[in-house]
Every structure is written in structure tokens, then in C-alpha cells.
Amino acid sequence: MMDRIVNMFHIVANEGHGSVFVVLVIGFFFGAIIAYSRLDKFEKMAGFMIFEDTLVPRMAMTTVALSSVGFYFLVHFGYATFAVKPILLTGLVLGAFLFGIGLVILGKCPSAFFVSVSEGRVDTFVGVLGGMVGGAIFTYLYPLMKVWMGPDLGTPQVFDYFIDHSLLVVLIFSTILLITAYFLPTIEFRDPADFKEKE
Image 1: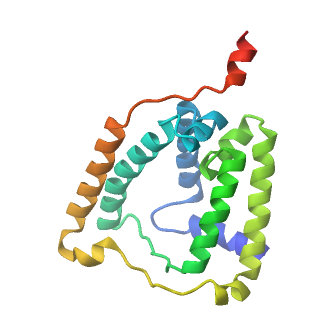
Image 2 (image 1 turned 180 degrees about the vertical axis):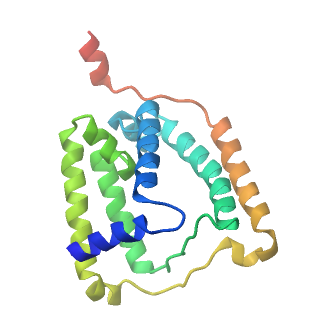
């Protein structure tokens, strides 16, 4: 297990288009944006789950739209690479189910976990530990679990149907997300406990 972890850092550190330092700097900026936009707050995710707060979907749509265009050009000019993972249907459904349960219980997306931990939130720290332990167990048992994670549906991509128009597909997709995020009504959920504390 430790060999895999060390190898992970070794791979990142020796990539031609990045380093551990670059990853850390990007992570710091990402964390700052999450903290500034308050996406690490429980009421933001809870409000989204009960359709009383639209910050999470608006932020997610904007992020995916802009990063999709940027990532396309990074790959196009050789500054980044990616590998599409196969769709293992049973594993995908079970993983989505477990992810949803954890999301509702902790009230946070995994990307906001460490921001919340840095703010001293014990509940999120427990979630991070649980995620790390669960990830380690899954990694260790993966060779045995892979047998029943199918059927394997391969690695289909939208680009497969528009090989000569991949940039156009990305631009259309990003534009739809940006327009949707812009016209989505701004609704903010307020935790009743916040008002009691102020009183």
C-alpha cells in the first residue's frame, strides 16, 4: 500500500507538464475559491438537496463550462493528457449510491472536505478519515471486486460521434451550461439555527 502511495507522488513529480508544487498551488487557489464562495458550508449543500439554494448548481455549471474549454486546449496543445475509464455498470451504480449517501450525511462535496477541515470542522474530519480508509480498502480489494463490477460498457465519448468537430462540441456544451447557470434563479437557503444565534 505504501509503495502505491509513494509511486503516486513519484508519477506526479516527474510528469513533464506538472509537479507536486504546481498541484499544491492549484489546490490552494481552488480551496480559496471554495471558501470564498461558501461552498464548504453545510447549509449550501443542504439547501441544494431540498431545492432551496441554487449556489451549488450555478457554481458547478460555471466551473465545468469554463474548465472544459481550458482543458480542451491544454490537451490539444499537449500540455495535458487524460484517459477515459471504462463504464463498469454495477460499480458505477453502487458508487453513485454510496457517494450520494455520504454527500447527504456530511452536507459537502469531497472537494470541500479539506477546506472544512482547515476551518476546524470535526464532522468533516471524520468524513475525510472514513473516505481515506474506504479508498484504501477498495484499492486493496479491487482485484477481487472487479469481477462483479461489470458489465463493462467500454469507454464511449460524445467525441466519437463528432470526430471532426470536437471543439464545436465543447463550445456548445459550455455555452449551454453558462446560459443555464446565468438564468437559474438566485435562491439562498438560510439555516434557522443561524437566526437563533443572532437573536
